[in-house]
Length: 606
Image (cartoon, rainbow, N blue to C red; front, side, top):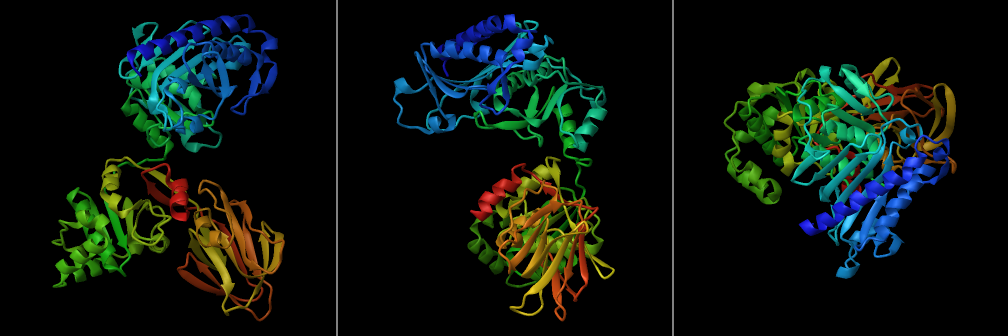
């Protein structure tokens, strides 16, 4: 967007702000303004005063001498200008490559014509307009990075913010100055939390004061001008509400990210939302992110290393990981079997040939093992996995290796998985990304994700599972007869080849293959899936993870085997009960990306 286009967009924004303010003024504080007229494009009810504001801005852009795309709260997505008005889907429109220069709009306007509608209706002085202007790059989707200009006006008191990308931010024509507070206990925090979010409650409890004015747009701008020290919206703010505010904050030198401290790079669309965490500076922002993600201890001082040992590649790579950790001043313990295998390889006279073979077969990691150091006494670092006492365990392998290790370790030890198996759904990264990710983790740039585990009780014995428990016949091609209870209520009596009780983590494993649903790990539930039931009406159940599930074998003379995570096998006889409950201790994973689950689903299962 050149200087001439920026001036055109700025003039249009000024006109919209002036005319919308003039149009709604007679309706502020009037009961009839609250009349619900329709449901807006964003799915929320639209009041009369909202319609008046939006109609005014649409009329201005429709009669403007340039074409523009607009994303607005009530009307949705339009193409406006030169007397035309047409409904569009912005993501589709931007992908078009058949538009001539005359047909291509100059700008994308993202406008919330009246943020704080209820405040305006009740004449509470916190309501205004937000306008963001983004560049159009026909042929690709637009994101928040494309926003070049931002304008926010508080209609109630006349305060006017504006920002230009790379040029700064102003409040009433003077440069804004955020606060310099770095102490959470002195923090003025604005925003919206979600009920039942313990980390958010902890953050609010630590703050000196909490404000909730009912206007995301204005409250974000208050961080830029020092009125607030920080703001968060854990419900998810609409992109049209934060597009201008984000630019204003960043040009003022503030920090605005998602819950995990990652850059907001959402597509510009009426349907997009983002969880927002904003602060006056990096120091305060980092403290907020740590509390929200339960990162009570950033420093990783002692690391355990575990690996599959049936292949040379993961053994060699594990040796490189150990050397990296030691070089970076970390204390290291190695699973005893792995230490033995690395030492055995170290003493092999054909070691150089073996390494070259691995590099040839796996070129994606060849550069990572060019200077591998075997001059380490690996056996002196050896420890039984049951006795691991460390800040993090690195597991090299696939899901089987990870489940085996997790089942033997203290569940309080966070796990970081490096995929060196077939699927690696539970692992965090692929091998080529290992050392970039470890650099981030050792700097404290990570978050912890909790996953539910099962406790399995049978005949006074208890076992644990993170993925699933499979109950099946111990004789090939024979069916079992199950009675399934949830909290004492019989929900099914079924004959089947077997039964799967799965956590959300296990929903993408055997449970999925048996016809169960894919369940987000954040869902607090368990899945019950009969395997090949001899009954048409039987379908999988999703039940609360606060429930106790009881499975009883009803067929006399038949026994069953139940298998925890493919690792531990136990037998059950006629009329014996197997009980399943949520474990008091979750599994903890080290994550470096917030997009872990759905990206994995698309990547691994497509």
